[in-house]
Image (tube, rainbow, N blue to C red; front, side, top):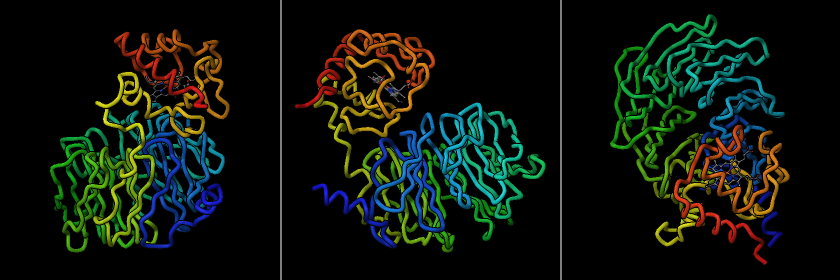
Length: 420
Ligand code: HEC
């Protein structure tokens, strides 16, 4: 058995046109980037970036919250996320900081740009010189993209405006669109003079940058969460909140594929492989799925391997259901279920807070003198983590009903204990 596992781990990524999955993350995949040398980087809700040249990734660890976006730039890799930081790998040094989540990244030869929910755009010179902050735009920025020569930056966000900025002086020079709803994603095809945007209300629109007209590929699904352009610029892939992927032929301007890619949950991330043969997708499932472009719609759905806790909630006891709905996205229950946003809860009863080896706790939890037991876990969700341990990385969440807390704790007692 072990021999088989090792052999699988050493398998290289398929060279072209095969369906494959990349497994190992412990949370949804929020961003995917591909490098010219074939490497794939995945940004995950589990706080890590996976760097894949085969089935076993190198884990880039350091972010203290979900990682939303990742980009290759020369020999460096940049990642950014819910901990407000922009980091450069290898090393994970913090090279930029916002006052809110960073949800979008773009790289040119001279700068990395960050789109942040603090309303600003960061322009971070790769040579380490002083950054420039563009805006505030007045509301969250979701997406940024450079013109090919790096002199202009396009941005879009919650206010629905598609702006152009001059990178040299940091000034807004033009506003192309005032969409009535927030814009989540941008793809620029400067060679063919168009920019595509995907919006909260399900709109997918392609704007002609020369003539000024637009093409509309809006279907009845929303929101649009991911866009990707094939390397030869002939295909535009669109992922949405209902788990579908639509592929538009940008030469004929027609929809060539439209299929349900996930059994549940959104498509958060899309990227074409460097050779254009495959389309990679990430979503609520913990694996990255990659389809050969030629056979997209006949392939397996991403979520065919559902995580085991996703039993039908009606068939679960109340405690298990509480866990599945309120905790399982961030916590595993077994000794080896790591790589989620929170530490595994295996063996948590009787454990002093903040002491699981290998997990990066907040200083607050590490320095507290709480011992986890029925009373302290009950108090944690009766008062809510923000009151019980202010400053911890736990999300604000209360479980109001005493019976729900009691059932959850009884379930945890069983599910976190050693089996044998
Ligand atoms: C969005 C992610 C998230 C959710 C949902 C979540 N947690 Fe957590 N949890 C965390 C993080 C992150 C930490 C580590 C906190 C820190 O370091 O400050 C944590 C820590 C803990 C700890 C302390 C573990 C230790 O080793 O000290 C317990 C106990 C815990 N969570 C229980 C739960 C339970 C029970 C639920 C569901 C009712 C839950 N959590 C839901 C993210 C989450």
